[in-house]
Length: 144
Image 1 (spheres, one colour):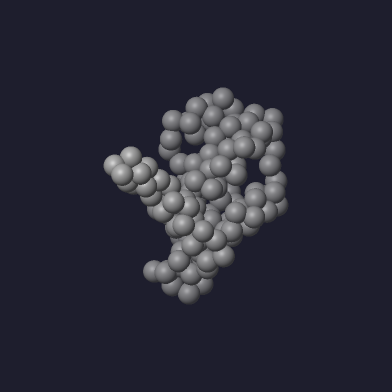
Image 2 (cartoon, helix red, strand yellow; image 1 turned 90 degrees about the vertical axis):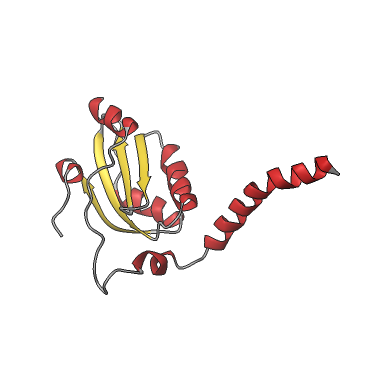
Protein backbone atom coordinates (compact mmCIF):
# COMPACT_ATOMS: atom_id res chain seq x y z
CA UNK A 1 0.00 0.00 0.00
CA UNK A 2 2.71 2.47 1.03
CA UNK A 3 4.82 1.51 -1.97
CA UNK A 4 1.97 2.09 -4.46
CA UNK A 5 1.19 5.43 -2.82
CA UNK A 6 4.85 6.43 -3.06
CA UNK A 7 4.97 5.43 -6.73
CA UNK A 8 1.80 7.43 -7.43
CA UNK A 9 3.21 10.49 -5.67
CA UNK A 10 6.51 10.28 -7.52
CA UNK A 11 4.76 9.83 -10.85
CA UNK A 12 2.38 12.75 -10.29
CA UNK A 13 4.79 15.58 -11.16
CA UNK A 14 5.72 13.86 -14.43
CA UNK A 15 2.07 13.22 -15.29
CA UNK A 16 1.15 16.79 -14.35
CA UNK A 17 3.96 18.18 -16.51
CA UNK A 18 2.91 16.06 -19.46
CA UNK A 19 -0.70 17.17 -19.04
CA UNK A 20 0.33 20.82 -18.79
CA UNK A 21 2.33 20.53 -21.99
CA UNK A 22 -0.55 18.70 -23.70
CA UNK A 23 -2.87 21.50 -22.58
CA UNK A 24 -0.60 23.98 -24.38
CA UNK A 25 -0.50 21.97 -27.61
CA UNK A 26 -2.85 23.65 -30.02
CA UNK A 27 -3.47 26.48 -27.56
CA UNK A 28 -3.36 30.06 -28.70
CA UNK A 29 0.10 30.91 -27.38
CA UNK A 30 -0.06 34.35 -28.97
CA UNK A 31 -3.13 35.23 -26.92
CA UNK A 32 -1.26 34.30 -23.74
CA UNK A 33 1.78 36.29 -24.79
CA UNK A 34 -0.09 39.32 -26.02
CA UNK A 35 -1.96 39.79 -22.74
CA UNK A 36 -0.74 43.06 -21.28
CA UNK A 37 0.56 44.34 -24.63
CA UNK A 38 -1.14 47.08 -26.59
CA UNK A 39 -2.61 46.22 -29.98
CA UNK A 40 0.10 46.26 -32.65
CA UNK A 41 2.93 46.56 -30.13
CA UNK A 42 5.96 44.38 -30.81
CA UNK A 43 8.04 42.83 -28.04
CA UNK A 44 11.08 44.91 -27.10
CA UNK A 45 14.32 43.90 -28.81
CA UNK A 46 16.31 42.57 -25.87
CA UNK A 47 19.98 41.64 -26.23
CA UNK A 48 21.32 38.10 -26.21
CA UNK A 49 20.99 36.29 -22.87
CA UNK A 50 23.82 36.66 -20.37
CA UNK A 51 24.53 33.04 -19.43
CA UNK A 52 27.80 31.12 -18.99
CA UNK A 53 27.10 28.94 -22.03
CA UNK A 54 26.25 31.96 -24.21
CA UNK A 55 29.38 33.87 -23.07
CA UNK A 56 31.59 30.84 -23.65
CA UNK A 57 30.20 30.23 -27.15
CA UNK A 58 30.64 33.92 -28.04
CA UNK A 59 34.24 33.81 -26.75
CA UNK A 60 34.83 30.84 -29.06
CA UNK A 61 33.90 33.03 -32.03
CA UNK A 62 30.25 32.03 -32.41
CA UNK A 63 27.65 34.24 -34.12
CA UNK A 64 24.98 35.71 -31.80
CA UNK A 65 21.34 35.45 -32.88
CA UNK A 66 18.31 36.67 -30.94
CA UNK A 67 14.73 35.95 -31.97
CA UNK A 68 11.73 37.62 -30.37
CA UNK A 69 9.24 34.79 -29.95
CA UNK A 70 5.49 35.20 -29.53
CA UNK A 71 3.74 32.69 -27.32
CA UNK A 72 6.52 31.40 -25.07
CA UNK A 73 4.75 31.48 -21.71
CA UNK A 74 5.98 28.67 -19.47
CA UNK A 75 8.91 26.44 -18.55
CA UNK A 76 7.58 23.68 -20.79
CA UNK A 77 7.55 26.07 -23.75
CA UNK A 78 11.15 27.02 -22.99
CA UNK A 79 12.22 23.39 -22.58
CA UNK A 80 10.68 22.47 -25.93
CA UNK A 81 12.54 25.29 -27.70
CA UNK A 82 15.81 24.50 -25.88
CA UNK A 83 15.49 20.86 -26.93
CA UNK A 84 14.69 21.74 -30.56
CA UNK A 85 17.65 24.08 -30.98
CA UNK A 86 20.00 22.21 -28.65
CA UNK A 87 19.94 19.23 -31.04
CA UNK A 88 21.12 21.32 -33.99
CA UNK A 89 24.76 20.79 -34.97
CA UNK A 90 25.07 24.47 -35.91
CA UNK A 91 24.12 25.68 -32.42
CA UNK A 92 26.83 26.12 -29.77
CA UNK A 93 24.51 27.56 -27.09
CA UNK A 94 20.80 28.21 -26.65
CA UNK A 95 18.72 29.94 -24.00
CA UNK A 96 15.02 30.84 -23.90
CA UNK A 97 14.16 33.82 -21.69
CA UNK A 98 10.50 33.67 -20.65
CA UNK A 99 10.53 37.20 -19.21
CA UNK A 100 11.96 38.81 -22.34
CA UNK A 101 10.26 36.33 -24.74
CA UNK A 102 13.53 35.79 -26.54
CA UNK A 103 15.36 32.84 -28.02
CA UNK A 104 19.12 33.42 -27.75
CA UNK A 105 21.36 31.32 -29.96
CA UNK A 106 25.07 31.28 -30.58
CA UNK A 107 25.95 29.54 -33.81
CA UNK A 108 29.24 27.67 -33.94
CA UNK A 109 32.06 29.50 -35.66
CA UNK A 110 31.70 28.98 -39.41
CA UNK A 111 28.20 27.47 -39.10
CA UNK A 112 25.04 29.04 -40.43
CA UNK A 113 21.34 28.73 -39.70
CA UNK A 114 19.07 30.83 -41.90
CA UNK A 115 16.27 33.02 -40.59
CA UNK A 116 13.88 30.83 -42.56
CA UNK A 117 15.13 27.68 -40.79
CA UNK A 118 14.90 29.35 -37.37
CA UNK A 119 11.38 30.53 -38.21
CA UNK A 120 10.34 27.03 -39.35
CA UNK A 121 11.75 25.35 -36.22
CA UNK A 122 9.98 27.87 -33.99
CA UNK A 123 6.70 27.43 -35.91
CA UNK A 124 7.03 23.63 -35.73
CA UNK A 125 7.32 24.02 -31.93
CA UNK A 126 4.04 25.99 -31.95
CA UNK A 127 5.24 29.59 -31.72
CA UNK A 128 5.88 32.59 -33.96
CA UNK A 129 8.85 34.83 -34.55
CA UNK A 130 8.33 38.60 -34.32
CA UNK A 131 11.90 39.45 -35.36
CA UNK A 132 15.41 38.05 -35.63
CA UNK A 133 18.61 39.98 -34.96
CA UNK A 134 22.15 38.85 -35.68
CA UNK A 135 25.68 40.00 -34.95
CA UNK A 136 26.03 43.41 -33.28
CA UNK A 137 22.24 43.93 -33.38
CA UNK A 138 21.82 40.80 -31.21
CA UNK A 139 24.33 42.09 -28.64
CA UNK A 140 22.56 45.32 -27.73
CA UNK A 141 19.04 46.30 -26.75
CA UNK A 142 16.92 47.87 -29.48
CA UNK A 143 15.20 51.14 -28.74
CA UNK A 144 11.43 50.70 -28.62
